[in-house]
Image (cartoon, rainbow, N blue to C red):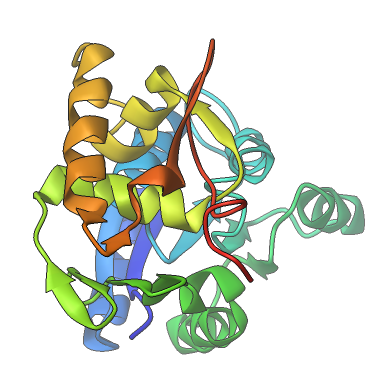
Length: 236
């Protein structure tokens, strides 16, 4: 099942309220933000399936947030629909060039917007990949929050699960401890960097199942942090 969590970013309460009611009737879960700072925090912490983003916002434009999301590989695949009263062709092109997946001008019919949201979610590669992650015989099921090795369930804590889900979703790239703290713990959570090392040790221990040992998938990158890689560990 693809996530149906929608982030509404608009500084006008009446618009957020109207969209929230329409989306909840359509069985979507809604998050709300009225500025780009709160919106970015919610994207990092909550991982919405799609973002409805107003162009004009206090503290910075929606276009600024859009560019920030699309430059980060952990948020670049989240679909974004721009909501704006700017109808000039140059504005439309500017939004699409910055990475917007769709563009809806105000005023708009909620039913049309919901139809566009559903269409984007159906073709969103990122949304489809969240349900089940597999590397060899290691399987992570997002919906049930279960992990299996060779069809046998293995136990691990919720933080280790979140850490493994992030790693499996972003393989072959080295992340610093600070980056892992932001992406797994959340941008507004303040914990020490060594906390990452503790949970990495626990994750490796959970993945070491004797005959089926997947602990080597979590690689230490000297001078940087950690990387998830199956190269040299699991034969294709």
